Image 1 (cartoon, rainbow, N blue to C red):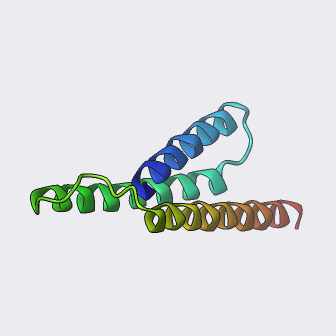
Image 2 (image 1 turned 135 degrees about the horizontal axis):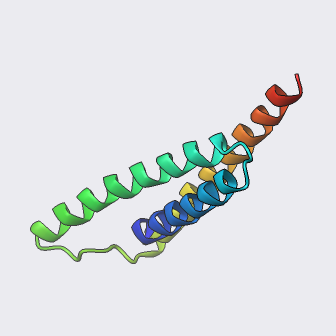
Amino acid sequence: MCELMTIAAAVAFTVLFAVQRRAGRPAGAAFTTMLMFWGAALMWSVDCIANRLDGEPLLDISREDTILGFIILAAGAVVYAALAVAGRIRAHA
């Protein structure tokens, strides 16, 4: 489940990055967060493929995996917020 949640977050931050760039606003925080989520999605994709090759289900839909997905989403949101605040502080300094 964390794989699906991470891919959804990566797509959402990709859209946010594109919208911010088109509007001419700084998009560094969205870009960094987008790359983090795409990297995590790639990592878990490899893990899913390895699970499948070992005869296990492709996706883990357990409660623990869902909780892990929410932890990853929360961590990404915290990183995005911290980078956005740091960017604003730098812009006003």
